[in-house]
Length: 206
Image 1: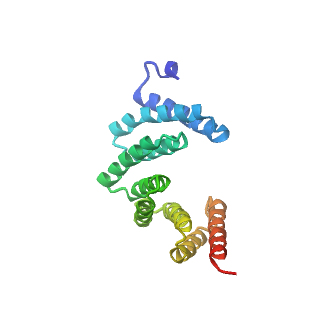
Image 2 (image 1 turned 30 degrees about the horizontal axis):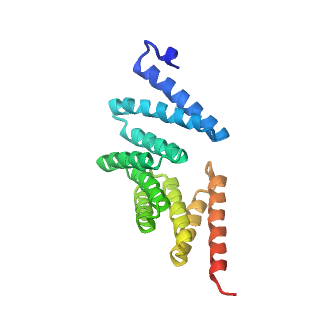
Image 3 (image 1 turned 90 degrees about the vertical axis):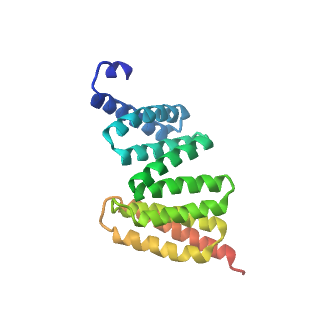
């Protein structure tokens, strides 16, 4: 990679970094070999100055979230929070509600994993509120925010709050019928409904 980038333009170097980081992420997804996750993190970090120079701040924040997600897989919890917080600063400075939703989801999950359940739920509710305002007009942000909040509420046993969220989730899915990726999203909605029914059965006396 370094040989390919030698004496090349910034644009060319960025494309090489993009290709190699993507390759490591694909291999990591297929094999779960942590070495590929670590390599992907290093290459993604090297992309950040390019985004800053080109003022592509949304993309910069998205890459920070990707780094945080990989670090979470590597169980480097403190770094996970730092990267999500850095992305959150960019989201707030530039009014990127889509990015704010993503960072709140990441921080909410981290808080829950550390045992701060109420803080985690608050962050996940913020993620849903931001997703509703996302400037990209993509329902997927709201779907993922709903999914994360539903999972957290099920774990907390807050079934009354869960039920309308699941119905809202399915309504969003139905609105996407015929679009690319619908089958994948419909599966998620079905799983959410199934988990809700299971939780209701467990909570109902025989």
